[in-house]
Length: 179
Image 1 (cartoon, rainbow, N blue to C red):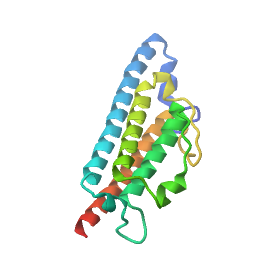
Image 2: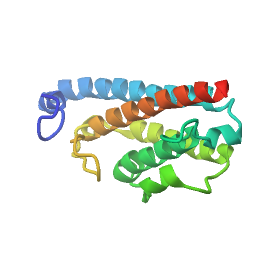
Image 3: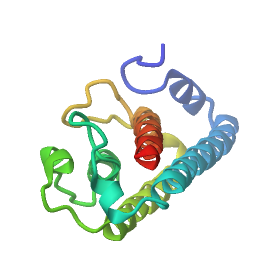
Image 4: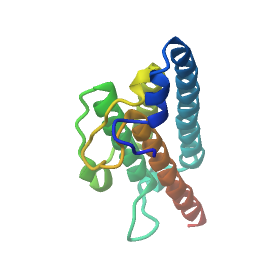
């Protein structure tokens, strides 16, 4: 039902209701935008709660020989949101180098990486807030993202992806505090 071709089925149905449906959809659109924007801001605040206390060395250190550092996960989230929302929805022109997000041997200082992340969250929130009722169901395509058929789905999937990695950052930060 949610992945029905052509976008979200309820948006399509209500869009055909005329002026009454248009007013309702404007309210739904504002509710969706406010909720998603607040969630992205929450994810950013939660990430900062765990990485701000880390030193630059801890931010980039892998507590295990496998996996990632908190810093590389921040680079990854920055690249992910800049590509899937920035380049593909906001049309920022961002070009992604996904492999480098995990392998950069000369990463930026922690503060610079976090500033870039914060700018990216601000861009995502601004893009969400610019969506009109009819924009949520617009077709969406991107490399490595076969599941999101419309804009609403990509905003939700990116939010879930970000929170997944924040969970990893929480774990890494706790491990680093023990060492």
